[in-house]
Length: 82
Image (cartoon, rainbow, N blue to C red; front, top):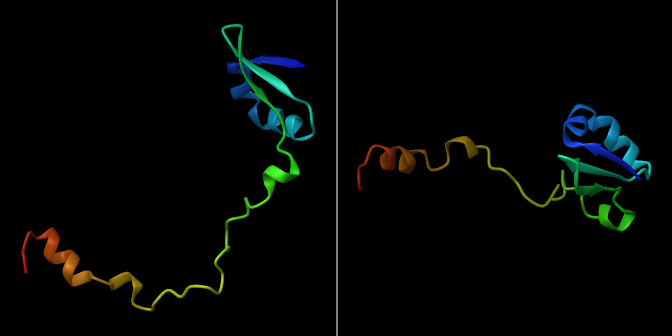
């Protein structure tokens, strides 16, 4: 198993992550002391990580979203009570 120092890991992070994703586990050391082991995620760990668009079709954003509560917010920022 390969051990890389933290400076080398920062310099070559993309390459090291690609290697770990292929199954080439490595250790990151700081001042020669092993700190963490980098290994690929299993298929089970990847399930449910696709968050973008997960509520598609379930909610609607109103047309006036950018101005909702504008009067109340302005009043509060100006320090007026009512």
